[in-house]
Amino acid sequence: MNRSRPRGENRDPIGAAIAITAVFGALAAWQVAHIAAPIFDEIHYLPAARDWIAGDTLRNAEHPLLGKQLLALFMAAFGDDAFGWRIGSVLFGMITLFSAMRAVWHVSHRAFATLATGVLIATDFTLLVQARIAMLDIYMLGLGAAGVWACAAALDAGRVGAARVRLAAGGVLMGLAVAAKWNAAPLPAFAGLAFAWARWRALPRDRRGALRVLTARDAGPVRGVSLTEAGWWLGVVPVAVYLLHFMTIALLSDPPPQWHDPVSWQAHMLSLQQGVTTPHTYMSRWWQWAANTRAIWYFYEVYAGAQRGILLVGNPLTMLAALPALAYGLYCGARHGRRDMALASWGWIAAMAMWIAAPKPVQFYYHYLLPSLFAMAALAFMIDRAVWETRFRVWAIPFLAASLSLFIWFLPVLTGQALAGRDSFLDYAWIEGWR
Image (tube, rainbow, N blue to C red; front, top):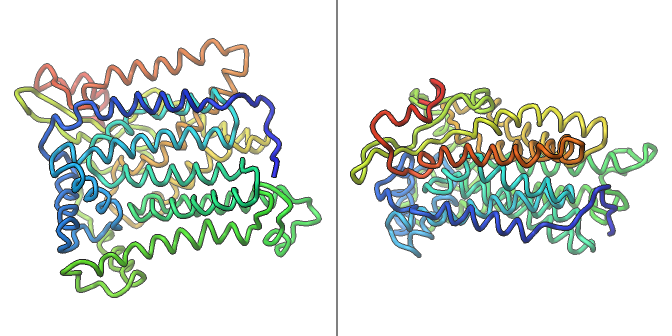
């Protein structure tokens, strides 16, 4: 399969992508254990991981298991201390960043858009904060982003067999992402719908009957793979992987009395999720995430002789700039056939739709972590098309530099560094919702 590449194709910037990932990883690992006390939701997940190490009981039954099991794996390998708790988060933060850049490259073949995606995600504040704390979300992000990368790479496969392997890997990885946390559930659904839509568009109008759409192999997005087969890799496989991981509950010495099988267990998990109704100081809703108006202080207290804070908030420049970029991506997709831009925008919509419709009454800004990856990709595409490819090119790099400058300014409260005093949070909490 030789897919025609878009106008403006340029050399794969994989070396630069590796460099961006390495710099991000070094910063994420820098003094990652200097706050040795549990931070925010670590108080819940560390005991749950210890129970998996001991093979004892199951805690946090409202969540899937894999995130806690991966945390337990890193703790068993590196020690039950702050470094052991968080080193896995550093690694999966790097996987998230690199996978996002590779996915953008495979769908666009735009070097600037690829590297801009890396810079924007690395400096969006949220990934760095999450890559330095032992929570489930970073494992979900890393596995989910890797799954999207695998599916995007299938578009570039030179042979049908290679494409099939990449789609299968994408299905497995996205299933594992959902097994880390439910937040990733929109990914396989979105991948399957995107494949179906692209197949329908690729077929001539006189061949768009339902049966033909399901069975055709001689059209995009992946020639040689029918929609029926893609449904297997992107639908059946993720669900099977997700359900099978629950069988590890049977390995515990004292499994919960509600445990019978993976399918019935889902109802128990859902009831626990819906049962969390007590209002929380930092709870928020999806429109506040998009507008970047509600932050979370993961940590703010005197520690090791100094006032320190860790703030989960989005980069105020890029998070807001991403909103018109998402609309621009939809426009360019519909009017100019820019599949890459449309995918970023529709991916954001799919990831947000879950939270708009979710029955979970108490929600938090960290639920925006997955949608924000698509938002940063959409912003990178807009800068690439509307600035880098035009006579306004001179403004593209300053915009990325501005994002980096804000990142550097906020770095002390992204990494828990010593602050000047008790009221130092006012230097960073620019609006009431950030306090």
